[in-house]
Length: 177
Image 1 (cartoon, rainbow, N blue to C red):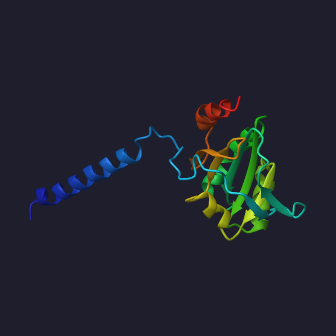
Image 2 (tube, rainbow, N blue to C red):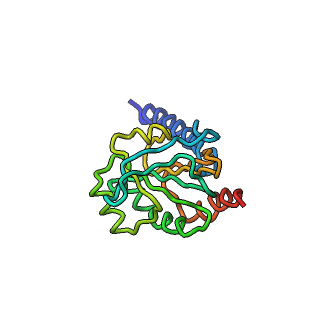
Image 3 (cartoon, rainbow, N blue to C red):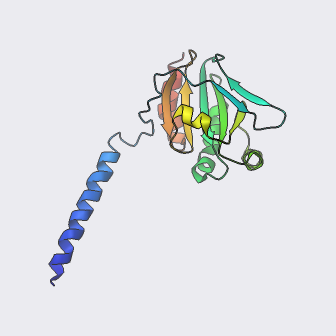
C-alpha cells in the first residue's frame, strides 16, 4: 500500500483534534466556566469540621462581603499548585475563604494544610461528597464566589493562578464595593 494511504487518515485525525481543541478554548482561556449554580442560592453546608477543635462547618445565612468556597484535596496535584494563590486570596479584606476537603482522609488534609499553610477561615470535611454534589463540582480544585446575599456569582474550575487573582478575581471582588 502506498504511503499516502496512511497519511490521509492521520491528517484527518489531526485536523479533527485541532478543531476540537479550538472549540474547547473558545472562552480565551478563562477558567470561569458556566455552571448551573451561578445565579442560584449557595447550598447550605453542615459538615464535620476538618480540625478536631472545630466540630462542625456550617454555612447558612452568614455571608458578609464575598465568600469563596474552595474544594481541595491533599492527593490533588493542581490543589498544591494553586495553594500559594489561596494564601494571597486569604489576605484580602473583603473575602472569607472557606475550604472543603473533598473525599480526603482528614489526617492527610490536615497535614497538607500544615505543610503549605492554612489559608482558610474555616474548613470542613466532605468525605462522602454530598457537599460537592450540592455545588455541582466536577473535580478538584474548584472555587465558588458567593455574594453577601448568598448567591453564587462566579465558579472557577481548576487551580487559581496569580493571573486569575490579578485579573478575573480582582474584577469580581470589586463588584462588592
